[in-house]
Length: 111
Length: 113
Image (cartoon, rainbow over all chains, first blue to last red; front, side, top):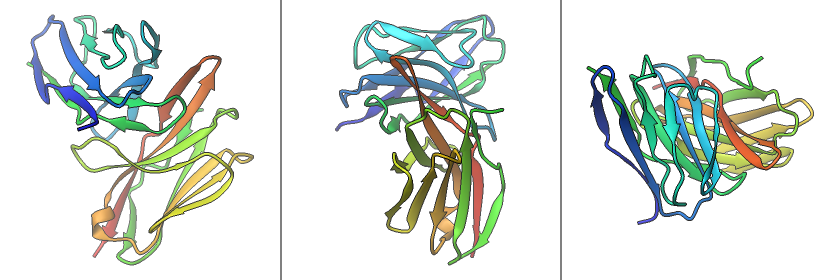
């Protein structure tokens, strides 16, 4: 099936620990995005990538890092520098300038 | 000024009525506009995309775009309780070689049976 897959669905992080969220797509989309959503809030852009080996910071990039070594994959690392990481993380992909499609999301909780 | 603004609601309409959702954006060079629906705890799903001024209809949904006023809206006719969700407006901003997809905070729609 074509689509965009995020894993895991739920993730628990201890204080001071780095964790990596996976995002894979087989839609042959050039652009990929990471968003963070807090309860009752909209989507805030963390990082985005238009092509392989290139990515740009969004509005809330501090405490996060990404890589884009393959067109299909855009993993997000939540580092210990992110002081309030508990949130719903959404990955999306699109053709340039076109509508984006989302994965099912990863719910990250700090324990 | 926020890049994409929506009234957070809740917008309450009776079943069968028309729901009207509005969105304004700040970047005049934006080219692509999208409406997404998000149920609680789920990821957003695309409802409509619109790229040129005017109206675009798809079933019970009509998207309206006015680039001069930097305004995009979504009308839902014959609203159903199953339409109760948060509706997110998204704008694709072009800056040089990059495309950046920005979302509003969403409007919560409640359709009363």
